Image 1 (cartoon, rainbow, N blue to C red):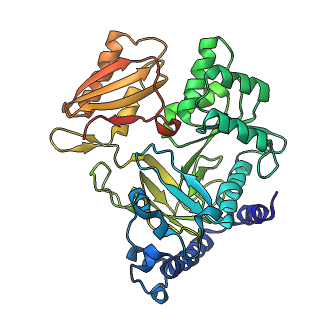
Image 2 (cartoon, rainbow, N blue to C red):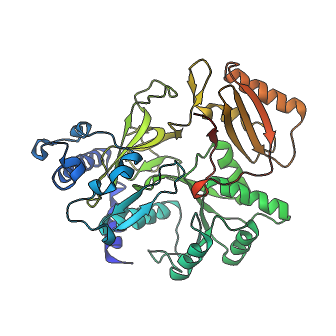
Length: 426
């Protein structure tokens, strides 16, 4: 294991057990240092005219404007620190699933922490990975995924074997890779895992046991979690992350999402869409780096909606702030004809009552029509469909016409992700 990675692994294995008071004090100091650095060395923040000497506490973060992906798109160079050459930095590019593809740059030390050390800590918290095998289902094209596997037969920590397969290869190839590699751990989108389970059923093959599964990038509902864990005899550890910050929070064995407080500060900004409860703890998730000096992003609004709780205790013993809820993106909102707005995720508990349902998508076709498309081995009976449709109409207050439609499969969007909600009009 390379020295910078080892240094961060050892530090984070200790810091995860700090008291809540020590965590808060550490974040406070790191926030002040990051804000001062940005005001001195980064053109975008320097031009705000904020006196670095006047930054004395974490509360000064509110003096900085919220930024979004479009700000990075407009001029990413203005967020790079003076004297930094992007060609010598690590970079991470979004998949474009939001329609706003961006590139974020990281210095070497931050890359060692966020790309490797924090992932190693998360893996160690889930299982003992020594001599285990981890299969990663990547959104890379097949050729790139194959090249990555050839170049890196072991993880950065050299603790376990690692293989990468492309999400865009066919399921026959994936089943063959699993049979050959026999993974103990699997990292993939929830929608992929549902499709993989369905592929085994269609091929008449037993679903293999994979004890530890890491999921990310998509909303993981309780029903989907239960289905995947039951099919693979697995325990799921879900991860919330962002291309601009890497992994932000991860699920411990007690099911709580712990913030990677060593690398990122998480706060909440109000929801303007009206789709969320009027609760100060719930809103737009806003991230601030605590480590990336090459491209420090302050008050970056992710577009995701959620809640954070820094007072809750966890049976696992960790006292870091917890991400208690992620419920989709701010743009994922049903625009009702009378002007009201509603989160489409309120409909999921009703849709998931359909027997045998594997996957679904809520499509807001027109201002007055909603279509729920679903994948299931057979079409539910007329009475079942009508009951589900009626309950959805009741939730919507009769404001939208609702149609349920069985489909064979869903095409993957940019980056290979499956979108639960799609609006077809503006």
